[in-house]
Image (cartoon, rainbow, N blue to C red):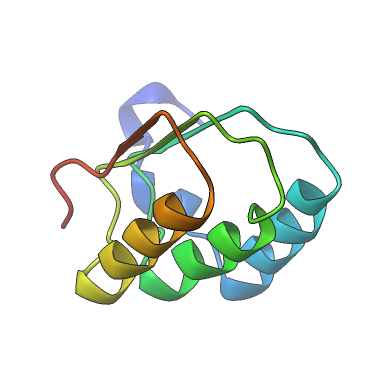
Length: 93
């Protein structure tokens, strides 16, 4: 793919893609998760957050994604359950 033809639209993720990612995340001991400039919406964010409930996550950044009110509420609930040191959701679409 040539640089002048690059489009973020070519990198769309399906719910199935995120489901597979979530299964993989369950098996890791992540401390930091940063996802930026993606098409992750409320449902996809909830799948990811659910897979991280038993992790010692310190930092969670979901910036410039497509997360709305329902996803924001899920992030807040997650931060109350998992003692993250830093969580951010910046400039959502």
